[in-house]
Amino acid sequence: MTTKEIFFFLYLLLTPKATLHALLPPFTLGQRVGCSYLLFYFWLQETPKSGSSTTCPRRCNCDSAQTVQCYRIIEIPTEMPFTTKRLYISHSKIKQLQVSDFGRISGLEELILSCSGTESIENNTFKALSTLQTLELCKNKLRRIPTFLPSSLEVLKLGDNSINAIHGSDLEGLKKLRVLDIQNNLILALSFSTLSSLCSLQSLILDGNNMESVSGPLKLPKLKYLSMANNKLHSFLGHFFEPLQDLQFLSFSGNHLEKVPPDLPKSLLSLKLERNRLKTVRFRDMQHLENLSELFLSENQLSSIDGAHLLPNLIALELSRNQLQAMPLRLPARLQKLDCSNNLIRQVTAQDFQGLRNLRHLFLDNNAVSLFEAGALQRCAQLSNLALEQNLLISIPLRLPDTLARLDLKGNDIQDVGEQELKDLKQLQVLNLRNNKISSLDRKVLEYLPRLRHLYLDGNPWNCTCDLLRTRKVLMAKRTDVKGGQCVAPIGSQGESWMSSQKILQQCEDDFSSAERIKEARKEMKTDDFPSVGINVDDDYYDYEID
Ligand SMILES: *[C@@H]1O[C@H](CO)[C@@H](O)[C@H](O)[C@H]1NC(C)=O
Ligand SMILES: *[C@@H]1O[C@H](CO)[C@@H](O)[C@H](O)[C@H]1NC(C)=O
Ligand SMILES: *[C@@H]1O[C@H](CO)[C@@H](O)[C@H](O)[C@H]1NC(C)=O
Image 1 (tube, rainbow, N blue to C red):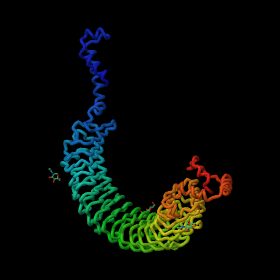
Image 2 (cartoon, rainbow, N blue to C red):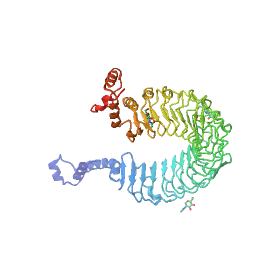
Image 3 (tube, rainbow, N blue to C red):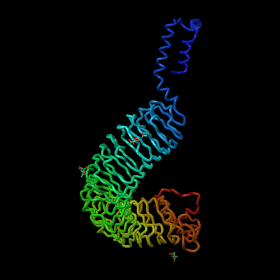
Image 4 (cartoon, rainbow, N blue to C red):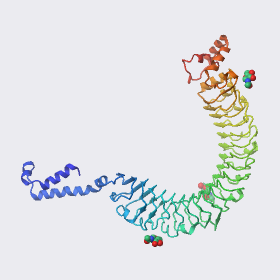
């Protein structure tokens, strides 16, 4: 109802009959009342809609989709639109929640109250919210799980509070609950009978508590995702995993486990055991995990790995930051990603990679590799990413697979970069040669690399001869982004960079006879099909850059 209509309505009611006769066709009192009643009826019909936009509480935004968002408030606003379905509050100061806070908005479906210093919640506060599906009270100061939650609840998130126990009665009757997240609280122990009424639970997150051991059986038949990372777990009692017939994702990263739990559910697809105290992994005890595709074992104390081929569907294996002295033996043929970085591996042989036809990403950086057998990776016909930085290589391994897109050799002892080593790498886009002992780079080497986009050359003792300027021209024509190239020799060029120095250009120009220049220039006109990018046409010196 518009303002105009309201005025008309009042006008009809209040205007003396005489005036009306002058303005409008004659109305009887009955007609007037009838008409007013009709308008009043329309006004009532419209009230809820216009009401919600006019009564949006201070410091809140209310939109037509029945969503209210409030910031910096100190209590649940009393004048909330009573049709509110979603209420989001954050960065506020609401010490306590009570039953009366939600009386007006009993149709609430989603309540998210975070970062608001909430310490306590009166009994039954949420009980009457019979349509509440999502309740998130993260980053507050709650010391316990709210009591008497409505049975309609599907998602309950209480992360980053100070809850120190889960009581049997807390979660009773939540038969629709799918997601329970109590991460980063102070829970010491968990008796899983307290969770036994959660027959629909799919996702349980208990990361970042202080749990030392848990005892089962964990009777949650629908559970797909279980994460208990960053606790102090060292054992699992009472057939803990037995009822979990559907579990796909399991994380125990950041605990105190000394061995892989033996009776893991065979439905697992992903298993995270990083940052534990594993000294060995017995793949025989895991071979029932026929669909396991990801296994994360980084940051343990493993000194060798053998037999992962018993996991036939393994696609990613992470073993970074252990104490492996050699490459893992008998790897599964489906493997696409292998991370053995930050170990003590000294050599790489063809034997190690025999059946790994699907390997795409291989990380061997930060080891002690000094021996890399020629052609060791030849069978890995899909390899695109090879990380060999921070090893002890004195040359680039020979016969690398021609599928490589990225090759990192930073921080080795490489002196020479030869044609032979790089000539097949037609797909190479990124080559990192930073921090080696390279002093020269023949342009021919780069001509073999048609797709090179990024080349890292800093931290090498470049001898800036005029030959390097030929290389420079090739790189510019390719539009390769080059980092570094500081000259160490000759003395006169120290501190200059051969990719950008005008001084070196000048010197080299003086070295060439003009006859040679003309000859070179002619040849270039015929053969140069490089795009003329990155060329400054005002730069006289450029004409004398030699091909
Ligand atoms: C709230 O409920 C709990 C558990 O049912 C009960 O022990 C407690 O006494 C109740 N608190 C109040 C103030 O009624
Ligand atoms: C492994 O995956 C296949 C295909 O999705 C499925 O049929 C089979 O039941 C799974 N095995 C287990 C033990 O869950
Ligand atoms: C730099 O290269 C020139 C020409 O090949 C050579 O004579 C000279 O010894 C080299 N300087 C260093 C420090 O290697």
